[in-house]
Image (cartoon, rainbow, N blue to C red; front, side):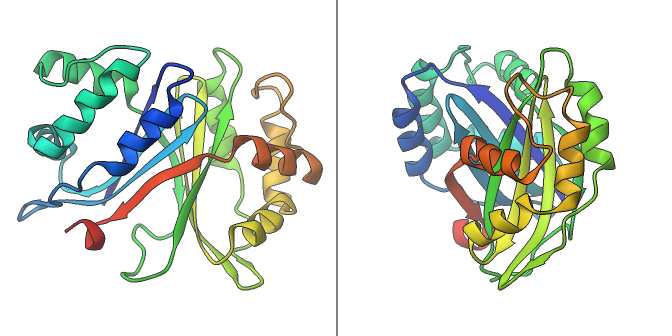
Length: 237
């Protein structure tokens, strides 16, 4: 299984309209051929940042080509186009390729099982890390070297985490079973996250300090992304 993510920005003030479009489009078929399947997609927003993640079996080019041909995807992309900060034309193969190249996020690290058991009542959440201009590549080493917090907090379990980066923006996805508030209370106390916060101190944008519990609480309050949609293959088939 492979994980991929795209990051793009929409015009300030259009966030509600964009979220409505991304939440409402019809689900495309997920089985592409015998060897290729779209296992899940998640769309998240924070301010005018949009992140779309995909989990796939098979090759990404085949999945992208499949989605580009689907009428429900084409209709949603046409609705989105007027709201984008950078225009695109996914009907033009060269323009579509340029969009994916400039929007693709780099997978920095994944910790946890590659896939979750079917039917597990997991929920996905994410944090957006604004980094200082030009510091994204160096900041990756902190995410890679950081340890994991304990996986159990009361009745809540942290199942897996994934960090993606695009230029000077990083996004940490985390999947849990249980209560988000309980998970946050657990994570902000975790020594591993506080140590990672101290390692990131010189890379984070001005005004962000996640080196202790109080700073992490503020960070979760300010930088937790909104989950617009989270669809698994079993739901979308």
